[in-house]
Image (cartoon, rainbow over all chains, first blue to last red; front, side, top):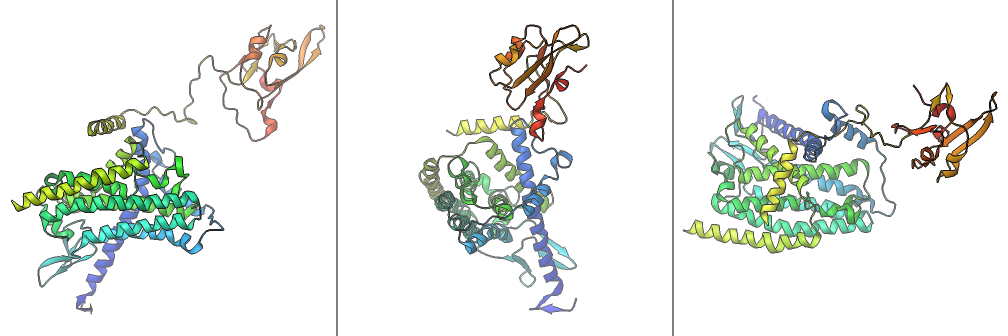
Length: 344
Length: 132
């Protein structure tokens, strides 16, 4: 192991790549089986069964769906902007996956004498003896969340269809209204932790000092606003089929359509992971660190599905009113209250 | 405003632990009501169809889906030589059964009537005769 690149041993780079691969495959599998879980959970909440016929209790359903989508005919509207039409699903999908890079999903592990922090964009500084990660992690996530919406708007515009365009526009308007409230609600967390680094935020919550208990309002606001931002039910207005056929993805077919779906679910997982990191103590808890993290994320994903099974879709003006007149003032109020408490 | 939202969540969560009422259709068949109006059947008496080819059923049929042609047997009795029901036109109203003076026709619980060809939807006398 004498070989070194940029002063770092070879094994370090291998570990980095392995970390990325493991997380990517894990998120991808979770995306696939989140669709299955969603169908099952909503099925049972509506006193029916959900998929049952492909494999034991329908367990092979995501694989069958994937195969089907791969072999379906691809349709590109003749009057569409081809390049934008093709690139839009990627723009929606990629940010959803890469925002996972800054989320710490476990403690530092030691492999062959090297300490490896379980966070993709982080390394262990042997000289300083501590984990160094990207120190504006939360801003990175918020920034990527807004990039994802470009994919949806571009898809809506490139399809050259009125329904798609309206779906895309709704999505951008919704993103702006809720990104503000979501961003403002987590400022309260930064005020308490005095850092934007996710490592530091997680470290502050050790031993059930969760920010969800210290900042319950911020927690609820952030979670609801995140749901709205990633266009999940009950805020899934860009694809409101009663008004807009299928919204921004009306003209999409086969794998490109599936990519929007994957982006939606990957976004959901990312949002749940961010909420876990910011408010639910990250990987801290009674079990091994990674298990804690996964359990919390999966619980939040379950909550998303539970919410979907319960509430009907918001009307567009109600959605806007809720964002600007309820959530935004509440989050500002929370900042003021936190500021007063911190100053005292 | 928030309490009803939480109440809704409670209701859906309680449903999660209820037994699903789904019927796994091709594996489990539903029990149809005795009044169900499915495929017709010609009743049999003394080893032959009870039908006397009186033409009351095609007359009353609002969908005009029944075709009857009468024949004469060795005892000079009238019988239905040809009895056809076009299931693509039938609206399962049951008027034919009500109109029959000799109680020769009934409707069974048979509801799986899908087929691949249009011709297969024309049920001739042999296919309609009550199976025992």
